[in-house]
Length: 190
Image (tube, rainbow, N blue to C red; front, side):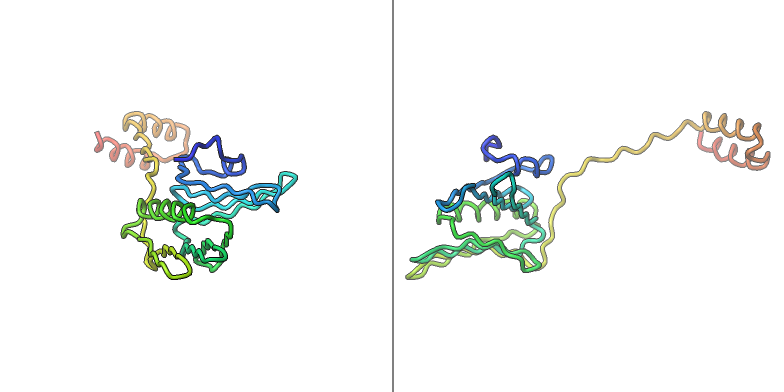
């Protein structure tokens, strides 16, 4: 679990009520003035690229829209790629192998918490590098998040409804026949 106090306001302001942050990676590159974040929550992946003067880019990919997550570490560099169903990608070149493994494991665990069928991480080790990949199945069926149960409106007492009908009849809004018919139906409910 990640301490929320360690996260920037830009992330905290964009979390849904009840959304849990499972994993967070922060990197400040030498050439950058502000850090970048990869946040894994129980509902989505969030990428935050802070800019100067309070500006930032925030991209989020809900697990339902995720196509795959891929990490490849070679002798020269590394790439962490997150792609959504529309083909849009977030490409991070600053993640270390252990950070990538923890991030992919957190994503897998979050997906498996809502997926009907579990997903797994594919690992490949070659002579010159290491790869991890997590692909969401094409038929991704999820369990829904618990929703607040809507309370049914309490039914009004039939006798009280008859009184209101009588007022409508006496004021001329409904006819005697309408009043008698509705009154009979309400009396049947008692």
